[in-house]
Image (cartoon, rainbow, N blue to C red; front, side, top):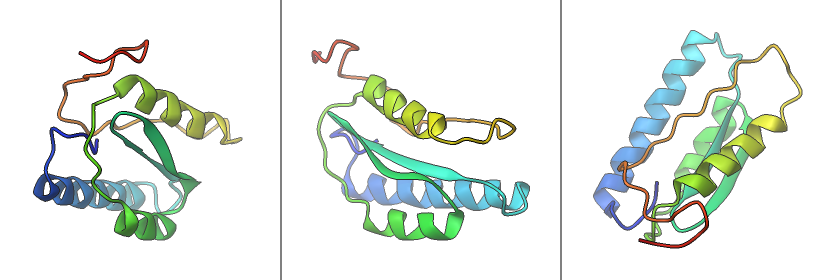
Amino acid sequence: DSSGALSDDNWDHTIEFAQLLVAGLDVASHGAGGYSVVRFDTRATIESHVTDRSTLESVFEHLVYLGGWTNHHDALDRCQETLIAVDEPERARIIVLITDGVPTVKWDGSTD
């Protein structure tokens, strides 16, 4: 969530949390995990399709805080897009949504 409800400081904490989460998941999966990153505010952007942890580290380093509205709907749609692209039926598909918890863009694209 890079929406306006966060600040630059909170954005840095969010990135740190995401890095720790991926590191923990990677250990638990013995390095076999695949991860994608979707940054969202008013619109969601796929920053990385499913890749390994080491590739993801460079993605985290280049993410910037933008501000804007909070569009959970678009974020979840883009997340599903990255998961559908993986042709490994045995792999668990999990979405972790990191947000301030308050969507300000409705499913139809209108704002509160």
